Length: 329
Image (tube, rainbow, N blue to C red):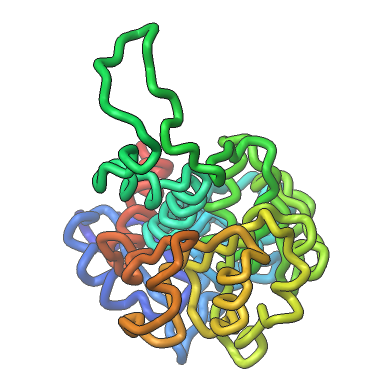
């Protein structure tokens, strides 16, 4: 296939040159053009472009007007906050979202921690493995369909998540992926972020915006999913934690410094909140003498939210596969 016969695809975000070069061999029918610090998508736009992929760069009418033959626009990531969907739809351009591996991995861990906390899973595992039934004066008996020792350790924290309220602090890609999963389980999603999502995106992710204090008061689970910046460092301090229900849990899969760790530990020790699921800490690895290590209402993870790992080549490869499918034949 000659260069003139290839279909031109633009990556609107800078920094994808290396990934595009690596993936080009798998897509000989595509001409991959990447924005850079010196040339943005608006400058690269032309009549030859038939496909556009964007992660966080703005896709608006001004850009679309310079792409008269654009057939497909893809958002890398499921939250299309940066896309003027009305302008795309008005032009009859096919539009879709390709989920990113990174946010998916972290959202999976957040949901895992929520479910594990709801079943008091770590305490239950320890009770079984240590034979704690003996302290209740029980002895093993053969079970059958009609004869069971239901709930033999009487874990008082066990509950169902259906009908519970999940408060997500930071509704970026991770928060949106978590909301989708929680909604399937019958949870009610509320969220807080500096700039609320559009009404359309709130509908897509089944989530309602509330102010931070209201989120803390209403939530059964408070999940921190926002970047650590000067504006968010220490965002959840003693005063904010004091607003939470006594039956509520904190889940942090973002960064440790967003929460006042000492204030959280005090609330956990004094049973002012029910528990926490933590993948991140102020110091990592978590110091062995941290009081968190001795609490039975806390689940601790060694910063595994990224799962098996990802990179731009993996995530862009998924977008190119979808682009190629939509452009065929």
